[in-house]
Length: 405
Image 1: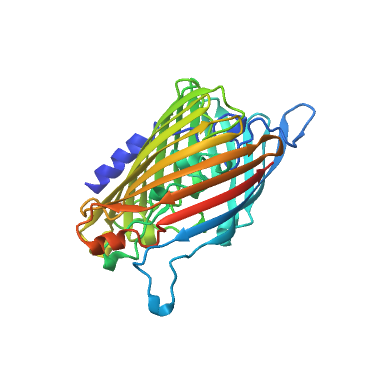
Image 2: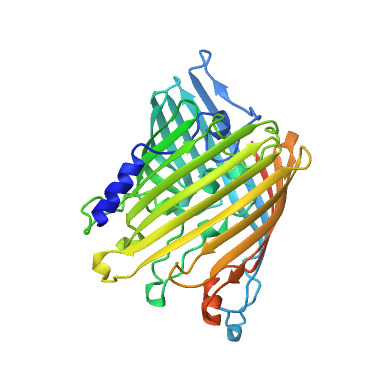
């Protein structure tokens, strides 16, 4: 049965994929939108070589208030934690093209540590217009929220349903995957067919951005390499969808995107589980309005060596919208949902958020602010309710200022 599932996933993925690294200048580096900002670049006289450095710095002030569960007052643990000032990203990189066939990109995030300092490093070879091969460390093709350029998101904090670790019974708490797959090392083929259909399919380590080494093994259960296999397809009837969730330079657009994605991470979580994910997304950029919604699913099953027969299913998603009240001021709303304790247990998290963005267009500055409330609904017992939001703040406030070049 497991082999049939894998074969089905691969059959789904092979003709698939997305617009990751879309063939537009505003999405060429995956970090910050360059739309309408030529910046500084070096170009050969013949135009067959272009080199463009870029920079993005984010500074933020955060406030997080946690409910009493999980806090031990005997150790003077406070309700207010993880608050103060931070630098979420300090990215310095360069991107470019050579001979209209090879694109390349490298970026360093000085705000990170360990292997995550190397945020991405890849080159992309266009064989023919609808077929290219990308190799290196880059974004895996899963979820609109993540594939949006870092500098172009509607709110300064990603949807919690994507980033929060799931909850399992106590004896299984060493296995804590999340919906997101993030940055990773691998290879993919991708392209844009007819200006409307995007596809992307590939294989990655499945270890995320935390290592730049080859550390994977061979699956004892399925007898294939223990890697992340994934793909995504997208349909864009009005041309390529910019990977931004609001840009003051794009107030007369009409772009629509519908995408399906799926992946399976073989022997993830220290070789203990096989995690299968699937996602559906819709996003629409119409003049001053931006709307998007996503739903995603994850199945976590254990390897035979774990001798655990149970498996767990999780769902999550969000809807969000932004509207430019003026050419510089964008209002933002989001409703985030997550069944964090698996479908076989009652209760879920609902996380509404409100915010705004102000663009200092001539200065390449972006000011963002948001507030999010984490609520809990439908749990069978008070203990279940208390456990469901462990590690998540009930009240979150963020003010962030971003400079990009």
